[in-house]
Length: 235
Image (cartoon, rainbow, N blue to C red; front, side, top):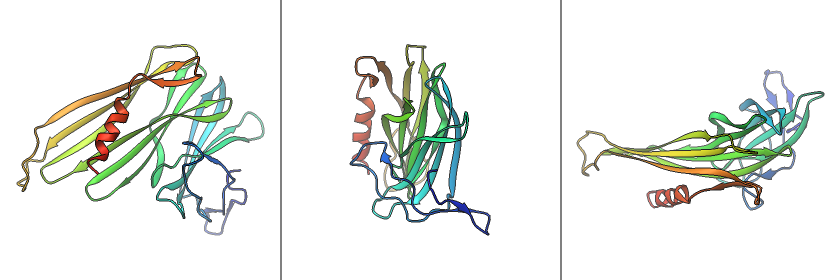
């Protein structure tokens, strides 16, 4: 349904051409064009709850975009209660490779899950990761926020930023989500030209709470945006 002409070839793999037209999760000014052909090298399946109903989310990384440094990855929502029906599909690629990120989903109520994806690319000493938080409302995907982290490994030290997610309480209609980035610097102990920094670790936390008037999740601070701005200075 995402790639209308998808079919199995003699090699036993699935091949197709262009996917259906879809929006980018970040908005109309984001994302590139899909590749002209795809063999679905990466596909992941995730059963979820949305609006009190059982749904199936599937993530297809279709590969490189011909006109963007980002890849092209389709997050699709299906209703499997009867004949399978495609309810929504969005491009969620915000870097070269896209996956579900552990724990993949967060239960924010008895009938609703928030999805976690990630897009990333790496070079010899640096890792760039973007983590979107995505909710489903009225069987449509909506972006809550994107979290930017940056890892680097140099001769004298390594610096790594790990993310943890926690559901806070059981608020109505959606529980709060606490996101904590642990930013840790560890000296390598190697003999290097530059002196290593001291070992350190700090937590940067933001809690997203449901705002009934705005009808969306709202962050309680800009701490993660400030971390992203600081990281950009190290690129």
